Length: 369
Ligand code: AMP
Ligand code: MG
Image (cartoon, rainbow, N blue to C red; front, side, top):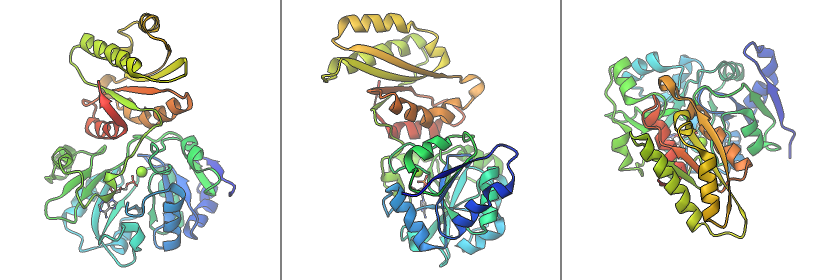
């Protein structure tokens, strides 16, 4: 066990507040820090023993490669070689930001970083704390999400503390992450660029802003064992309770009907000695406002041997806001703390980040209703 210090940083933090963490990072310790996507668990990318600690602390499978985080474009040639010209067009538009690119790696990158591949994943995060930490540390930093393997990625500092307290010396607390979903991963080491993991930045954004055609993630979904995306085969983002997706229906009545049926079916098949059954609902505000939960609870309680309790968390999706995405992982952890037996989340394919949201939700979910 080591002492874990949480360093709280507000918008006006001073670089001096994170110097000791940056020095620890540079010298081989692990430091958790906020990015605009999720919290990262950083290690000096050039020190094999520091990189190794990440796998141990997270319980991460060794064949799941890591993303190298940079703050200065000049660092690119240290970590990647034979860089195709389109890389610069793409970075010019999207760096710093929530886009990870795959390029051929240099010999300076230890084999653990790339899980033995000859390519490396690279990102320039766009978060003041992350950028200051990277510039003070002066080295490329590998940083997977700062959670135990298999758990939802952390989007707040307490999520990191929950998983990694006593295992790492510093957590930089920069508040809630802006997006709350992991970066888009774009493979530029192949002739036809391809998105290996959907994220905030979509194929459409890349086409519109950089004029570059990339293969869409949907097409790749049929081939999830794509050898270039080794880590994608692992189970991710999962809370303890089973997750169920309430499918999108244009007709609100039909969705509410599906929700009721889904709950009834779950309760009917539930087999436990416990009397109370807790269900977490993570639903859009308009849906929550359009049914009477008390009435539903009463009717369900009358027809089963369990006493049902609902924990409802709603989000506002007006104007295509991505609130659901920002809150999803936090809500998984909150539901875990509330010891719910089932989690029901609305499908949200029409969000700005709908493809990425549905990708993460599907990975966490057991079935649809
Ligand atoms: P995370 O677990 O969120 O840190 O994301 C890391 C993911 O990036 C891995 O699970 C891989 O899917 C992907 N990745 C990292 N390096 C490479 C690489 N060299 N080639 C392809 N995918 C990579
Ligand atoms: Mg992760």
